[in-house]
Length: 186
Picture 1 (tube, rainbow, N blue to C red):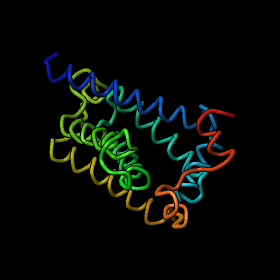
Picture 2: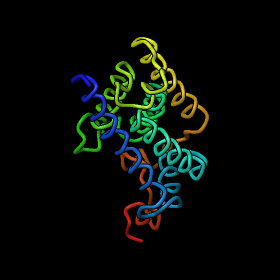
Picture 3: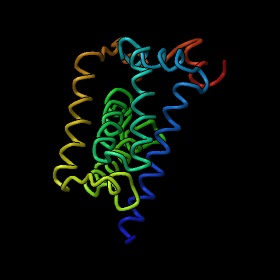
Picture 4: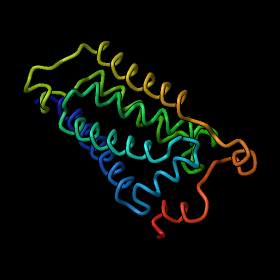
């Protein structure tokens, strides 16, 4: 293996594994699917339960595929789309910095995913073992089309932010039992 292969392996395992754990938490952590669905509905994604399950399947499925390097640019695209959606519906209105709930974190993950789509999985992955390889330009294009295209379709069809909540607090946030459930207090 070359240095690039080691780099790609480390990035794939850390980013992919992180997304698997993130998706697992949406399904089985704190508020479970019901809490995640309530949180998503509070952010304006309708229906919340469908989007909760969609996020779980995407984050766990694409995260696992990225981790092992299976259809790497496509898996990166699926996760890129989740970063676009999160950035648009929750983080962009808070500015740049993550400590203010800004888009810094999702931007960094999206850039790493795009770079991984360009580089492919490297030699220590399933793609290499089965002979799947896209050029750098095609890998990036696949990632961006899947990610941005999927996010645009989802947002256009299903995102209906509550204007009154956003105007009062600057942020649509779950309330009552839903907020407690998503924080693991239930």
